[in-house]
Amino acid sequence: MQTLRFRIVQVLSILVVVAGVGVLAVRSSHGQSPAAKIESQNPKPETLVKPTILATDRPVMKDAARSPFAEAAAQNTLLRNDLTWTFGSKQQHGWYLYDLLIGQTLNISHDASTNDFASAIAGWQKTKGLSSNGMLDENSWMAMVTQWQSDRLKDKTPATPDQLLMAPSSDFYDPERLPELRQVERNTYAAYRQMLAAAIADPSLKLAHTSANDLAATEKFFKIVSAFRSREYQEKLRHDSPNAGSAGLAVNSPHFTGRALDLYVGGDPVDTKDSNRAIQVQTPAYLWLVRNAARFGFRPYFYEPWHWEYVK
Ligand SMILES: [Zn+2]
Image (cartoon, rainbow, N blue to C red; front, side):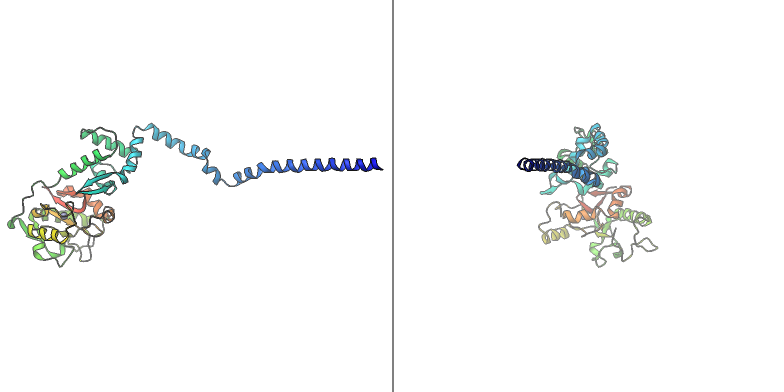
């Protein structure tokens, strides 16, 4: 009996051990398969790891690596927002506000982060005798600013009364503007009216106007905010806003000539805050001026989207 009992115990314990090993074996095989199942059912974790990235991004990476401007394009992407430079004794951040002017200068419409943009910068740098690295860095950026500034009015001799005419109040952003503040140099006004007719004729701008090609009372875009300013009036403006700085209200203003027009292009009409200019440089009116004003003899002051000078 004892031997039989011992044998039963022996057999039972063997069974227990076998069963235990079996459970362990099943557990360990399950320990791998659930993870594998999750991966195959849910593709998300896979997209986070390298195989998918390699599969989809490799051709793009290859293209970028092949372009000699890949590194310049990467740098331009950063410089566009982060380049620190000084203008009008104020620190400035990036050149993103000038995308349209840069595109017009380079005669391209590519995004600043592209190899094509960097390539166009390199071509422009060559014409300026700069090292053609394709990067709009501080050196090249200041050269571009200098180019724009040199395209502006050179002769700032104040207008004499006979050179000025009084424009109708319907041309002005503020219809109540005093007559002495509605004076414009004669040729500048004729060029403005031609440019205005072209803008009105462009259906993409949808400018509200009369049959005589005047802007409607309800229309603000393209109206004159400010034109001729006398030295006395400029002094008063400078006195009223002492913090405008040299980028704002110049001592020797081109407005003295009657050939500078501040036109309404959106936002707060003449506010240099980055946030305001960021609104202005995205309006169809500003885009139109950047692309077309030169045909009528007007050149931009890059820093003030509203300020255009008649240089003919
Ligand atoms: Zn101005």
